Image (cartoon, rainbow, N blue to C red; front, side, top):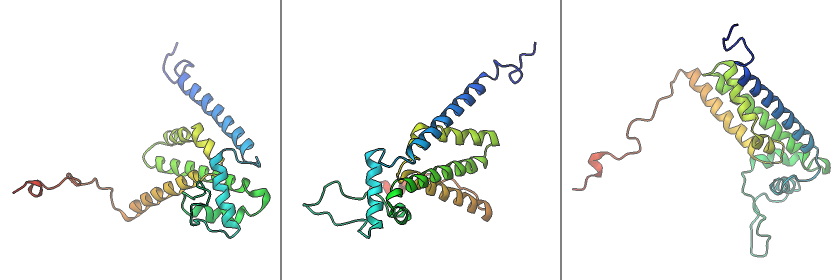
Length: 195
């Protein structure tokens, strides 16, 4: 009987359990996407707030109105304008107040997965890079917010894109990543001694 790890079922049990768990989580994620994306109402309060600002901008109202004592105290916009500038032209229609921005969030999730794979692939094998991407994608918190009208997934996609482009620029220019010099945040011993 051969008891090498790769040839028997017991040795491959952790890999099989991981694969089954990832398939189960992928089915849960797909179910969540299919239930959430076409739902015509906000799934949570914050989703309604973000959709409200996109709708206001599509109607020509200010994105950052002046707030006075007589205004509703929670009617302020804590986000930057990029998400709203992208979604405002798409949310002016009654049917797409939630659906199109949700699809954009899912698109941001897919961009995040692609960029995580590409960034991981630089230093890891194909299977390790896929595993790193699967760990990100398997998080219920990630796929919960990636199917909602939220700024988060697209902001994360743009952040990962900037890291990816920075890595590409370093690769093509031949520069290397240099560590910070010792004592960068420390004061010089001559400067800190009192006289």
